[in-house]
Length: 171
Image 1 (spheres, one colour):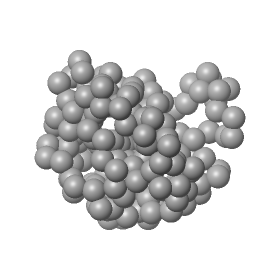
Image 2 (cartoon, rainbow, N blue to C red; image 1 turned 180 degrees about the vertical axis):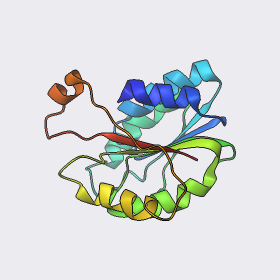
Image 3 (cartoon, helix red, strand yellow; image 1 turned 90 degrees about the horizontal axis):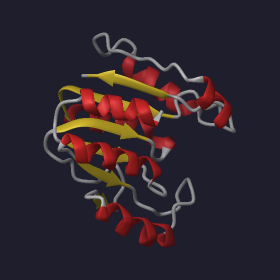
Image 4 (cartoon, one colour; image 1 turned 135 degrees about the horizontal axis):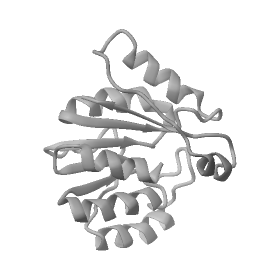
């Protein structure tokens, strides 16, 4: 999945990359590494308020300086309230899965033409709402967009709880 994110970042226009749902920052660091080479800025948005995933104040205090040292703009707010940067080329949604549809609806218009919306956990059986929300938004309301995920054998072996998967749609 991380390789696919780097590939999508490379293909996307715009200078801003937005990650919704940072947790401990593992994916953010992958995005930040690619952003360095691509001349892009990563905006990491997460309230770190333990609403869903156990992201705590202590985690925020540990992760924030690590990410800022990589040039990441850390924004401690809900994805539904955070400011939207200019020139957004990629939005990666992996935040509070209870409002995935609201995230999609809020952040899709922020993408520049040719930008890409990436949604994580679309095939995770623990989060059926993610795929349901994506389908509800996408089917019948948008022009044809590209939606695909082909997990590698290694990804299938490594993921312990079933396949999480990515979906991506170009604007």
